[in-house]
Amino acid sequence: MTVPRNSLRSFLVQAKSAIRTAIDKSQKITFVIGNESADLDSLTSSILYAYLRSSSSTPHAFTPLYIPIANIPFSGIQLRPEFLALLPHANIEPDHLITLDDLPELSSIRSKLRPENTKWILVDHNALQGTLGSIYSGRVGGVIDHHDDENKIPEDTANEPRMIEKTGSCTSLVTEYCRGAWDSLSNSAMSSGASHAQGDALVDDSAVCKLWDAQVAQLGLASILIDTANLKSKDKTTEHDIMAVEYLEAKIMACPQVSAGFDRSSFFKHIDTAKKDIGGLKLQDILRKDYKQWTERGQKLGISSVVKPIDFLQEKAQGEANGRSTDDALFTAIRKFSGDRDLDMYALMTTSTSPEGRFQRELLVWAFTAESIAAAKKFSSVAGGELGLEDWHGSDRSSHEEHMEQDWRKVWWQRSVEHSRKRVAPLLREAMG
Ligand SMILES: [Mn+2]
Image (cartoon, rainbow, N blue to C red):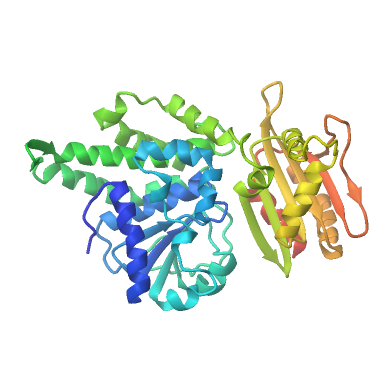
């Protein structure tokens, strides 16, 4: 069974109301969910997968409709200026996105969405974390991801994918997996009577479908370009990313309405500029904007990724402390952020461009308990070489180190800039294990 072809906008409206029905009538439901950092890649991976799978024939599927869900509350959307810049290209608004707020309260979710009535496809991660993970892990029935395989997903996922491969963007893998379905969808629109009457006007169906294709293609393309720096990052770009960009760009170029004003580099710049425009956000929001958390042997680890350097965050923190000269305003803010989440260890990874135009990374690790202090020290000695960790000094020449009994903190330059959180997180987790 197939859900009739629709625009992405109408599809999302339909998907959102299907959640209500599934809860009210205790019906079966399939979710496609990205990771809890809910970055652009997670968002577009889940939307592309859900939209394309729902619009094409998927025999033996758990349900014909797949529902894409962003792994954050709705308030998190406003923290992601790159979402706000991109959504209009697909003719959708923030309200169309489906978030954790559209699910029942976590305290009662188990009874309102009974596990046996659900199936979960993971995109851009391969282990369901947090409360959702503790209730629904056993109901995960498929995965497309580009992180290290945590071996939580069964080997045999029957009619859903189990695709875990190193790529710049997970969206590239989703595009690759769905392109057959997408092509037959586009072709059937082309061959099924070219037009229908709407009022007095004759509407060209194939032109409408080309526009829908181009809208969805722009969503996917944005993530791949962001994750690979417009395919220019040698460390990140893979053959999968290059092929997916080619494929998605062809969908965009096939639609005269969109292709006329489209240029890949300016499209990338537009979204990338929006992503880095975080000056208007509060510091706590900057830290939670791209944040992931794990529990390793009972210890909680949280890692924030930020697209601005530590100097920027220090200024931000001092500004928010009302100009009081508090050298450690940033550290006070981080301590609060970690305390609110009951963390044993916190790490902050920044990316920025040096005055000479070089891409650079800083890494801060802060351990708050005796056990995690041991882990942090182990991390620094085991992983220091691979990550190219080098002592860091701020513009005030301070190293901001702290070596106390209950408190250990260090900041480094991470000179091996090819390693993102995808590598740093497993290294920290190993040290904690
Ligand atoms: Mn990703």
